[in-house]
Structure formats: C-alpha cells, structure tokens
Length: 414
Image (cartoon, rainbow, N blue to C red; front, side, top):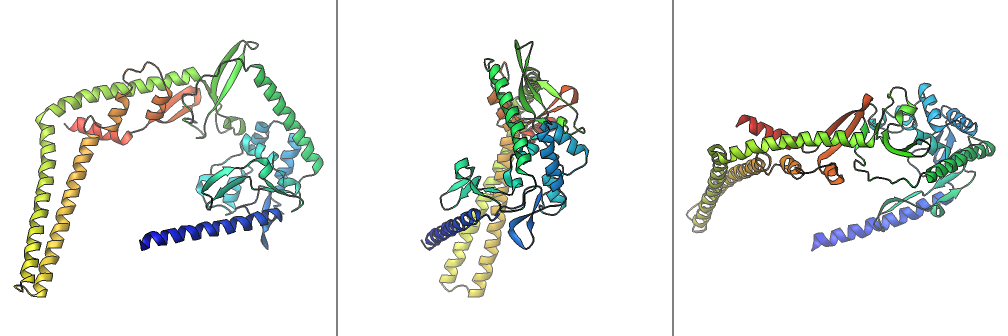
C-alpha cells in the first residue's frame, strides 16, 4: 500500500510540474522568446540569451540564395541539387559538424526537395517566430502531435530578418502558383482508379537508403495511367543514380521472391516432418525432459533436507553455526539446481520453437502456400524491407531470418 501511495503521489507531482512548465513555456512563446532545441537553419542561439536568435553568418547567405532562386522560378529539386553540388552541408549535417547535435544518424544527410520546401515556408526568416506547431502534455496524457494553425503562437519582430518582405512575397507567389498548377493537373486525371498500396512503407533506394515515392504517371495524352516508384534523391544528388520501377513490375518481383521462400519452406518442412518421425527427435525431447525432471527432483530433495535441518535446530540438536552452515550449503545447491532447471526449460522451448514445425519462419511462410498474388497481409507479415537498385534490380529482406537460420542448421545437422 505504501508503494502504491508513493507512486500515486509521484505521478501527481510529475503532472503538476508538467502543467507549470507548460504554462511557463507558453508565456515565453507569447513574449517572443525562442524555446526550441536548436535554431532554424540560418540562425544560431544567442550565446548571451538562449531564448533569442541571431543570424548565422555562415548559413544566412545560403538562405537568401534559396529564396532568390525560388523568386526567379527555379524548381525545388534543382535548388537542392545545385546546393549539394556546391558542397554545402544540409541543415542537420551542419548542426552535427558544429556540435549542436550529437547523433551520427545525420552524418549522411543531404539537401532534399522537402528540405528546401520547409525552409521556404518558414516565416522565421522575416524576423518572426511561429511556435507551438506541435504539442505534448504529460499532465493531460497527450503524446506529441501537430496543432492546427489557429493554435500556433506567433510573435513578430523578435530577431533580425535574413530576407526582405518583398523577396518573401515573390517566393511565396511562385510556390502558390506551382501548387495550384499541380492540384489542377492532379484533378484532371482524378478519374483514374488508385490501386491499393501493397508495399506501403517497405520500398527503399539501394543507393541512398531513403524511401522510394509512389507517383502517378499519365501518358498518351491522358489515356494511360501507370503507378511508379522512384527515388527523389537522384534529383537532388548526382551520387544517387536515377531509378524508377513500375509498380506491377515491383510487385511481381517481390511476389517471385516470396514464392521462392515458400518453396524453400516446403522443402524444409518435408525434411522436418521426416526427422520428427525419427527416433532422433524423440530422444532429444526425452533428454530435455529428463534434465528437467532431475533438476525438479533435486530441488525437492534439498528442500526436504533443509526442512529437516531446521527441525533439528529447533530441537536444539544443532548449534546456530551448524544450522547456518547447512542452510547456506542447501541454498547454494537450490540455486544451482534452479539454474539447471531454467536452462533445460529454455533449451527445450527454443528447440520446440525454432527446430520443429512450430518455427516462426516456417509457420509464417506456410500461411501463404496457396496465395496466387501479392497482398498487403503477405507483405506486412513476411517482408522487412525491399530495395531497388540501378537497372531495377529488386532485393527483398525477409523477417524471421534467425528462425530460418536455426531450422536450416537443424535440418542440415540431422
């Protein structure tokens, strides 16, 4: 009861602190104080006031150039590619180089189209702060989520601007026109049916490691529609070869790989079925069971001896030191046999799980023995990752690789 009460008090205290901190942060936001982890690209936190932004002389010229290019009508992908070719570090990689962030996951970051778009939409470069775009609250039990625009906290003139209002307006006008043009074009071909995305979130570029994007390709003057996967990094970085693959071809290649794995499962299952009928399989199980029974029997025997020693001590047939010596020995024996019992149970369970038809790999692929085509369920169950390299070579990484290795060893050794 004391432990439960302490946990309740700690929970209430933590939520109270969260509520107070949220109020403090909201007040800082309304007062135009920056409360983010790190400044937007082009700015740095003021060394003398961490809640104020100052212009970064190294990156501010890059920001100005991006806005100028956009105002001139240059495409986002072309902007990203030009910056990459100039050897300018992407925002996250720049922060890593300066020690602002520590995670090495940013070491390979490059300028992407999305990076350019995010930068062009950020009003921070006009000297304004827009905060509160995401919200999480411990006191209310809310996980981090995006907030609506009307809930954002906007403060004007909080720091030195990098670009002029005129340049901002010109760039936004170009972006708005491009967006409207894209929406109009999309609406023009809205009558084409959108097939189900079978490999959603599973397809990646073999060169840069980033996800491939699924696009609608309309040809023949609007008569034909194909869905393709392509790597957008190739538009932003020459080091990543241009690649795209038609969705039916990709699905077909993945299905063929799965069929090959299913055939492998069929072959191994026949071997396992034969081995499970043999005496070797039964003798292995018998050895596990014997080891378990022996350990349990020994634990009971030691417990009986320990009880007998206690009774002798209670009857004053043993001294305290003799009783302590005996109980210490029996405790050690019990611990040893308990470890022996747990090890035997674990080995038996592992053997049953990985080296018999209960094996997860075998069970997973056996579910789809009669499948005639690739399905969402099949992809989600069996596939960990699909990679597409140059010339449309498709590589599939399957789940349950450890289970496959274990059952293969068992089949080979038997």
